[in-house]
Length: 297
Length: 266
Figure (cartoon, rainbow over the protein chains, first blue to last red):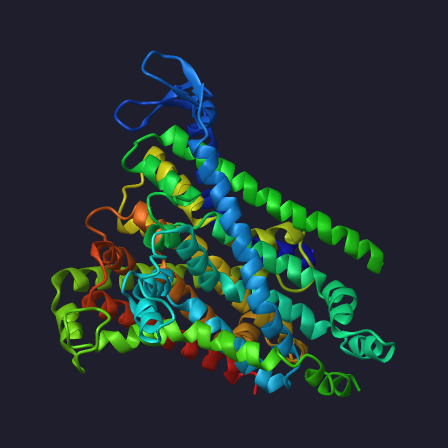
């Protein structure tokens, strides 16, 4: 009897937080899916009772003035660009971050904690501020150009700002700690005497890296890739500050449907598709890690 | 034994310390440059003309800045308090023998971190408008509380899991009633984590931009929205100053949170 009331009390303690998130995350997600399936109202809202898949066909087809439907790749291009830029960012953060994760894991515990702290500190700085700092560096005749031209490395401004390159730089800078932290966490548990053994058995550095270290920290690498990929795919701040009109990403496209375009169903559909992509990426990770756990058992 | 293993390794991967050093330089240089130029006396954002605090004076005297800062502080205080309370209760509920469904509910509390912000923003906007929550402070507080909960919860739960439970056991054995045990033992052991969780939630709320952009009405502009409005107009020394203020506030709060969270580990 006592344990039953105890259990009820514990449920009572845990429930408010769970319910709060269930209502204020679950509710919005459900309504978003619903809105993506109804007709848009001319004034910007939606007509609740009239179901249509127009928002989803609009993604592929465009209606011209004569009422004919023609294939339209504009939106697909924006999704592909987002995937491509996010993939590139994952790769860049991995290349830049992996050696550091390894370096930190090899330090004494006290120094490790300090290095991790200073790695994550910039991450708490406002995302707008971090991207704005790159605006100072990248803009035409900005600091990067001043330095490069001052050193006679280049003779004219690079004109990187408002391009895909600028977005990639901004995204890499913004989300780098999200790659390093999980890789480091896996490295910390990794038994480096295995690497020693590989060297003793005549492996060179590349072989040790590919056949011993990478497989040993695979879980951390996959987690890092996912943690970087997801916020990149849905990023809004970086493309809005550093990207131009020719380098829109999914986030910009969604936002436009709720401001200038006033097309809620389409905006909701775009957001829902983005959410599905994120869920798929997370599911992929689960699949990749399941194989690994089975082997460990 | 294990430490010997990797003491001898570093020289085999010789580039490691250099690339780690470069990474830290890369992380901090842009921010240091930004801070440096916020003290620039000239009208150009990135051409140094001597030290001055004039842009800070401009910022602080701005009516809009003050209003936005006030809104941000109000939203962050209320949301972080609410989220910390909810997270503390949840962490207390989720300790000991797992409850039914706990394996689903604990990760569910981190759900707000998984969904891209732009999706949450759009979905919450639609939800609020269709349910009838007016855009403005109340909506902002509700939405901010949602994504503050995971930050507070993860911090508090981590402390709860590593905490020494024998003291509570001892209090129980000595016939302290649950209330007394909670206030005399559990809470004193837990409060640094609760406070650290609160501060993290507070910064996350203070810094939030995307969700606020969609949900703030015209009268409840927050600091990041105000700053974004200025950034869109171009690179100016005033933006450098506003950015630096926000940067310093975030860093200070993180330092406080880390310091407090470390107190009870010594």
